[in-house]
Length: 254
Image (cartoon, rainbow, N blue to C red):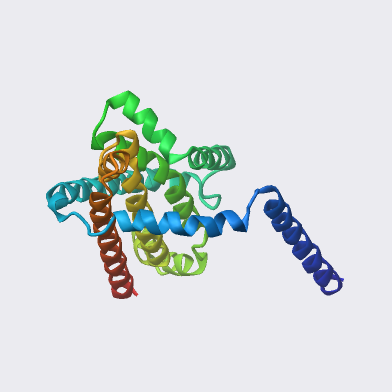
């Protein structure tokens, strides 16, 4: 009976997706003529950015370093909180009266836009990198704790039980039975979240939360497009360097 219903379910799913795409396309007021007319304006904007103004490199360097500090410390704070909330959100080890409220809390944290959190933190502690660090810590915890909880739930009990039958202590079971199963997932998700935190940190300066985003806002608002180009190139180089570093780390731990 399941095999007979599978094709019909597939067609229904495809139909629903098609209807959703059709509804979005018809109601989004998308005009191809406007897109074609945007080409010359975009070319004019890019032309104003050339050549990049390299005289602002010292300021750009300071902004990039501040953004890296925000991303690193924000990720560290979220990892610390996720190590607490993750186990509390795993239904394999936490009782339901703890597991369900913890999952609800994580969902609530993820539902709040980062830019709103950053604005609240700026209002609470003032301008600078501190509100950016607090905003990243708060926002990233919702995702990381969920990932950690899922990693705990995916742990297979057989190796742990075998260690227990062999006389291993609880600490040894955790070290040699649980952690080896969790470590690759935990590392992968933490690196992924750090990359995301770095990208999000780039725009936090727009609301006064420090980092390179403040320079972007300043240069764009004052129509200094050559300086904006320099900032854009620097950001691209940093993102590519982080991506390469993370790839090397993943290969090293496999």
